Length: 277
Image 1 (tube, rainbow, N blue to C red):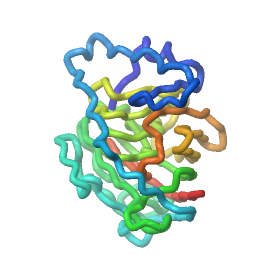
Image 2 (cartoon, rainbow, N blue to C red; image 1 turned 90 degrees about the horizontal axis):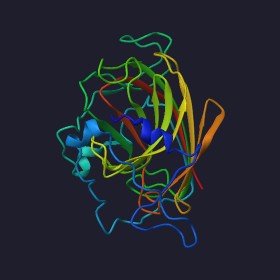
Image 3 (cartoon, rainbow, N blue to C red; image 1 turned 60 degrees about the horizontal axis):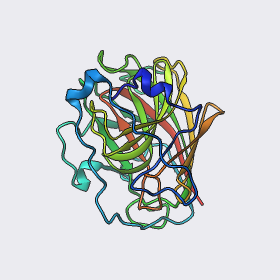
Image 4 (tube, one colour; image 1 turned 180 degrees about the horizontal axis):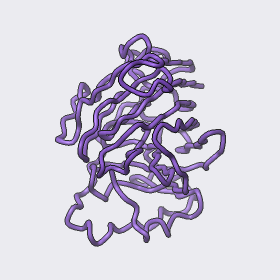
């Protein structure tokens, strides 16, 4: 939902960019980098980031394991609008459990959860895990956990990076305005921190990683992310290749979740596993 300017890309130091939130950097670590200015053409679109409500809960899950094929419905998945969030760009989305080879899509697609709606951007829809696999009643995850999921893009709006879309997975999710996500686009793979950012705005979005990577429609990508909320780090692997480790002050031992996100694109999520330590 946002584009990285040439100046912003030039400031990414390899695969690791350290950003800090509210002075949360550990003692002795270098100060956060100079904030990235928005592209001049977007100045009129910029709003101040929306801060995370304080105090934020710090209930953590316990060690556990969750595997999801989405063939038993969506009982463990919650529309984040039910958490009290109401924005003009936040949509219910059309999320359906799809058996392998089901009608309404390519027969080669595996069983999984299909978001089956193409909308003009900005149009975001989230489903967060809210089950009990980690010892809580609302899906809170432990401080250390691994997420594995396969994403298969199908189609996207002509204004939303077709044919893949802005295909992001909020690995560390707090609310629709605060999360760290891994993002596939037609020609790149990126990691972003949304720290109070709004769709189609600039402030509040922090680029943590970017590399060239071509992804085509109907091309499945296997994403693995290892999170250590206490250390504020996330290590991301795509199709068996380690992309890098990023750090951001938003990742703390808050009550946090895993979520799936759609941006008005058609995409299938399959073979999801969450393992908490």
